[in-house]
Amino acid sequence: MSRGGGKGPSLKDKLDGNELDLSLCDLNEVPVRELAALPKATILDLSCNNLISLPSDFCSLLHLVKLDLSKNRLQQLPLDFGRLVNLQHLDLLNNRLVTLPVSFAQLKLALHRNSVEILSHPLKTSLPKLSACLPYRFHSCENTNLKWLDLKDNPLDPVLAKVAGDCLDEKQCKQAAVKVLQHMKAIQSEQDRQRQRKLQAEREMEKKREAEQRAKEAQEREVRKREKAEEKERRRREYDAQKAAKQEMEKKTKKETVQTRKPASGSRPPQPPRHKHSWSRSVLRVLLFVLLCMLCTLAACKLTELQRQPLCVSVNTLYEDVLAALQNHKTLQNMLQQNSQQ
Image (cartoon, rainbow, N blue to C red; front, top):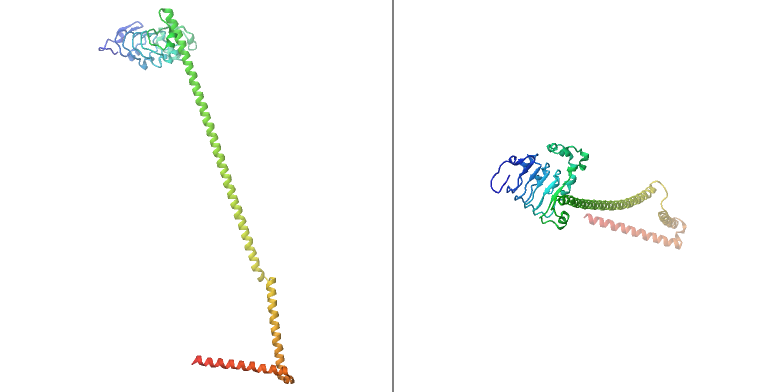
């Protein structure tokens, strides 16, 4: 237990039955560990000290039934103050409180949710009415609600101050407890509704994002599908073009092969070469015929009695001239051959 001066006597020395008086002890902090070791101290008086705040583990003192925190300098209560489910009498006179934690509303209903813990608590032997209640009937027991509350002389929020009213007598303090619990319950319900609306909005937003994501993925799949179809169509056209070109090449090659094999197979040659060959043969026949006629004429002019005819005379003269020219040509050729040898 911390004081302004030194270490004081043990808490057990201050315990009188179920009441522990720690008022006027110049406390700066609450000795929670020592208090937790005294579950019989259901009435705790911490008034007239220098407490600015309560530690969070203070709310583990579930055995407290009556609590006096008046005339301190408390600026706020712990957020889980509603865990003090057995609390029936609370004095917060002359502090610096502006608001109360939302969990304050649980002082009316929290006991039902913590029934097992309460039944197993050693305090049940000192609270006959509580120990007689079954878990499913806790909410109907007389000792399950905060019965008395004093919030005078605090700089309360105007709305909360109006709800709390004055605590000038027992009746007003009991009314203050009921009204403040109802007010805090309404605030808690509103916060729960806001939380639900926020969660609903977040779920809807998440659904919207998921829907947008699905739509985006579907669009991407459609684009990929269309691109794949276009690519397949392009490849099919290329395949068809290559196939057509290959077929055309095969036809051309086959045609050339057929044209090459036709002469070798003994078939008749094409018409234009056949006409050309026939014309050359005709010319050769004419030349042979003319040469034969000339030979016949020469023989007739040389060997028959027609050699004195003018035509034969001319033919014989021409023959002798040609013969002489050939002999001269042969003589010239021999001379050139001799000169080349020398």
